[in-house]
Amino acid sequence: MTDIKEIVLDTETTGMDPANGDRIVEIGGVELVNHIPTGRVFQVYINPEREVPAEAIAVHGITNEFLADKPVFSQVYSEFLEFITGAKLVIHNAAFDMKFLNWELGQVGHKALSWAGVIDTLAIARKKFPGSPASLDALCRRFGIDNTNRVYHGALLDSELLAEVYLELLGGRQHGLGLSGRGESGAAGEAENISSVQRPYKEPRIFEPSAEELAAHEAFLETLKDPLWRKLKNVDN
Image 1 (cartoon, rainbow, N blue to C red):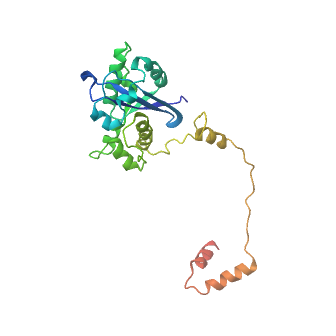
Image 2: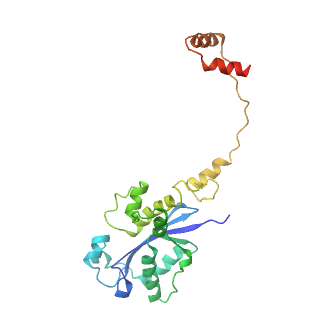
Image 3: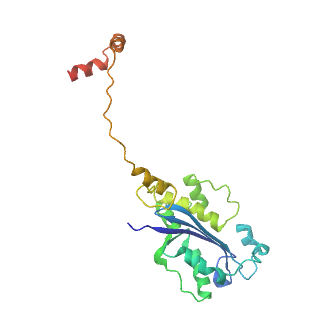
């Protein structure tokens, strides 16, 4: 069976539209294999080569001073592409992130990422819960996922939260459990080892009541009106 590799992905930006000069300032991703987190993550902060507006800083808390010594996109995109190679991308409101990622890739002469391998959790949530709030925070509340550390938006933190939300949207965080799958380490690998343990067969033990216990039981039945035990005994006989 071929393993299913997915990258739960998020970006933070300077604004809403790269066509207006906005750029990516952070990319974060979490790897899932067969819907189980592997522990592999990706995070990079990117110098957008422009000022980050105050309204964007209010959302993600990433300041111009913090980004001043960070690499530009052309210096990090190869590492990012290597991380996502062979994986489907799980993104909340995928149109936004894909628009920015493909614009940035176009600027360095790389082909666009294909939509064929993209899973939009926003679309899944709206279909599953029509008319209900479908933001990441709203879905965390719905599924009881702790997002109290989310003071600001952050690409890696939001990817970690979205990974939990995504598994709930699939049917619950117990989905698959990896009991029959492969895993490099952790629960999936351990479960596979446990399932292969050979245990010796043991004959069932029969425990007969003593004479004293039978007498006590009969005495107890005398205190009851039309006890069920005697009806069952008559049926058995």
